[in-house]
Amino acid sequence: MNESRNPSAVRSKQQIIDALLALMEKYPYSEISVKQIVLETDLVRKTFYRNFSSKDDVLNAYINQEIYAYTQALLEKPEEPLAVIFDFCEKNRKLLSLLHRNNMLYLLLLQLNEVIPVINDTTDMEKNPFKLLIGELEPDYLIAFNVGAIWNVIFKWVDRGMTEPLEDVKAVLGQYIARLNPPR
Image 1 (cartoon, rainbow, N blue to C red):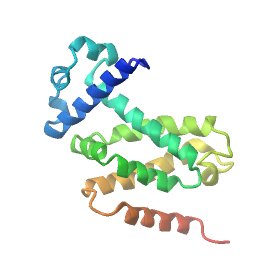
Image 2: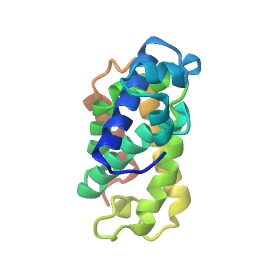
Image 3: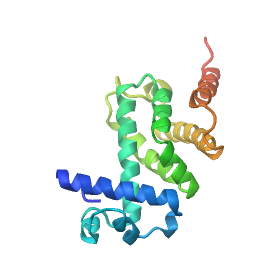
C-alpha cells in the first residue's frame, strides 16, 4: 500500500476500503475483484493501483489501520488491556463478522503477532501494557500465549454469532485471570 498523506489519496483509500467492506457484505471475499471494488467507488482503476496492489492489500490496510488504533489505545490505558480489547471488538463487530464469514479471522491474529512484540520491545516499561503480565520473564512465548488465548476466546464469541454481551465474556476472562493470580 502506498503511504501517501495527501488528503485526496487518504479519501481515495478510504473509499476503496469502504467499497471492499460493502462488497464483502454481499459476496464471498474470494469472488470479489478489483474491478468490482472500483465500480463501487467514483474512482478509476489507476487510482486503485496508485494506492493498493491488490484486494488483499486493501483488506490488510484496513486491518492494519484498526490494529494501529487498538495498539494506541493499549498504550494509553496499559492498566486496562481487557477493556481495550473488548472496546476494539465492539467497535469492529462488522469487521469481525466479515472476516469470520470468509474464514479469515486468522489475519487479525497474524497482525497482532507481528505488532504486539514490537510494542513490547519499543515501549517505555512504565507505559507497557504487558509489564504486569510478563515482568522480567522471556516475552516472546508469553506474548504469543496471551494474544493467542484472549483472541481465541474472542474468535469463539464471533463464531457463536456475537450474541453474548461482551461484558459477560470479559467477566469470564477476568475471573479466569484472577484464578491464575490468587492473592498471596
